Amino acid sequence: MDGYTSLNNTTSGLCFSTRFPPIVRLNNTITSHLFSTIFSGLGLTSNFFAFCVLLGAYRRTQSRSRSSFLIFLCGLVVTDFAGLLVTGSIVLTYHYNEFIWEEVDPNCHLCNFMGLSMVFFGLCPLLLGATMAIERFMGINRPFSRSSNMSKRRALCTVLLVLAFACFIGILPIMGLGHYKLQYPKSWCFFSITPEPVDQVFSLIFSLVGLLSIVVSILLNTVSVVTLFKVCCDRESVQRRRDHEVEMMVQLLGIMVIASVCWCPLLIFVAQTAASNESTVSNKTMQVNLLIYIRLVTWNQILDPWVYILFRRAVLRRVYPDLGRTRASIMSMYPMMTTSLRRKLTRVESMRP
Image (cartoon, rainbow, N blue to C red):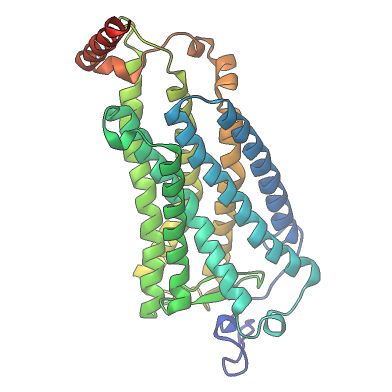
């Protein structure tokens, strides 16, 4: 079959019906087990360290907005860590034990679980990034609205809702909208990209949700940065220190840039392949390209934690000492509201015995 190996659909599960090109297991190729080992080790170590840093920052912070933002960041770190742990353990077990999928998982339960995990843990950072962009947009541009004053409980519920939405999308192929299949080089499972209508629909849903999350993050973060820049440049106003706002935006921009660079190639590839009625099932070049894009996506989970580690106020002050000095707050953009609040506080003080 022109160098391809095929599996009979009547004797094995549907998830094993993909035709694969010859697999070369050299240490200098993209299929090497060294890639998976190094990526998993770096990602797990980095996310664990970042979680410890975030936990310490959460215990010390007294700002409500900062606490809510840290909850989102912790959700991002936990999902990145869990994603690497779940998918990495399956991939590394395959590489080092070289088990036969058809014998270990004849009913495709393990393959479906891994495919669901890939989609779920893949969409979580994109959706959480967009959610954090919305939260910071409201906190910076609508500081007096009720929706911007997010409590810790509300932030936690929002994270859980985002995770539930990502899980719902991941379950769709198991419910019949799409299929999870074994992918080249037979070490991982992902949804199939074929001209079949259900595969096309799910491929477009996955790619459009991811791309929409990135677009929302870019647009809202851009507006928030412009607003925050205007506030920080206002030297004549009387302000209180709000340098944590700068810290949050720097971290959010780092998350956005990393997600855009790591995810856009895969999302665009999936959308283009589905829209053009092409298939990765029997196309050697597309199977290899899909693996390369997945490797690139893995860097998102590796680099994300270093955003929280390196872009903290303690580190930023060493690079830019003026950050620790008095800076304009978001309140300075609304002088009339600030005056009104001061008058109310003065009245309360005067009424005290």
